[in-house]
Length: 587
Image (cartoon, rainbow, N blue to C red; front, side, top):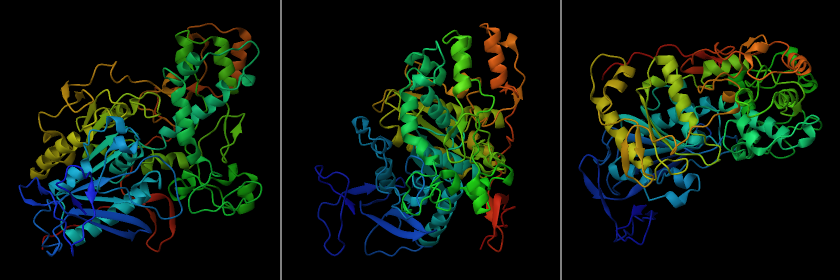
């Protein structure tokens, strides 16, 4: 395909080498080489699903790994998809000829054509994607990382060596970049998350909380006698200005964990149904990652698990001890009666994601495995990767601005600094600035070039921080491609709201999937409870309430580069470290 010199023809046009077009534009790469703007896209299948590789290409000229065409700058940009779900069939890889997060989210009104995919190709980058790096097709860090590793190996074998790799992606694409970079460091050297999510499984507590809170708030028959709630009080418990964020999150994300929901590649007859087909395929992102989480122990098996003779995949979310609405109570936004009634009625979910009166207790070994595998992104290894996060206000679309700062807080906790992460803000909804996608790529390219030139024998995290160009900082943009100044925008431009867990006392890190407990203390509450209300709280929290000053239960560092099979191919639930890489010797 080619880019036309005719301004009325947007995007790439089909190109037939046997009948060359006469309106081919030219492009000058970042190495100063001017060539016709013709692009070759390779599509293939590897690791059981599709990949694509696009490069600036001159028809009629040879290209080998040791003798690439001269316009190739030996840099790679990886594009990603959105959402979080699963599929048991092949799919198309995300586009390698165009990438703009505004288009991805349907926000075309703020799109000024700042397309990082087209820029990268014109500058000489290779642009690559795999269907399995699309979080909406495969919400599993291990499979995503494996597909990218294999595709990069093929690219290097066929096109030539790489100086560095940069990832770009919004929503589920930001999630894929950040948890892969932490669990499998080295696949990317720099990442450009937009509308950030740190990972799926710490975000899953917020999604679950919203689902449970909606079931209570939106059905007054669940409220106790004399209890009345207003929408503003709903939002106060949820940590937002309006309850719309909970609604959008519930509609958009919750189904991914429900084992009976339809997923591509599985017919209705094949799909799990607890009453009629207990041996069917469970269309749940937890079951997709059963080798990571492990199967549930026999002590908690349901009748269907007993019938099958094995546990289903464990689920690493929990709400035991969570005091929903605690901050709203302490600030008198809600009454003690409302607080008690809510916490008495909230309940939990069973392994089939049906509502239960009792709260949900995280499965083992799934909880520990979620941390050690990187399914919950502890940023243990994320200091090896440079990050520029494009961030805008969220008008209730479940892409909360706090998540960029959750990553920042986790980096500070684990490494004492977040100097490898920059946040670029602006007023454009969710994406911050219409040109942030492109401008952050240009900045990251300079940053990575500096790191690549640094041959000093110091650690990679130290180089990432030391070699960051001095003009790159947190930045504020006007939404239309103009930088306003260094530093974050004023809070009114990109407000940072909370979650049901931060209202309940959790930190902005929001990765305490199961809290440690402390005994109830009546003196800890600013508003008084009646004796009857206090007795009810004691019945609700017999083991105590969350103590977020302590590390979470089973919280531990991410172990990089885990493998989930033995040398003979047998499953290793929970994963084993691969060990040190083999020593590389020059030719």
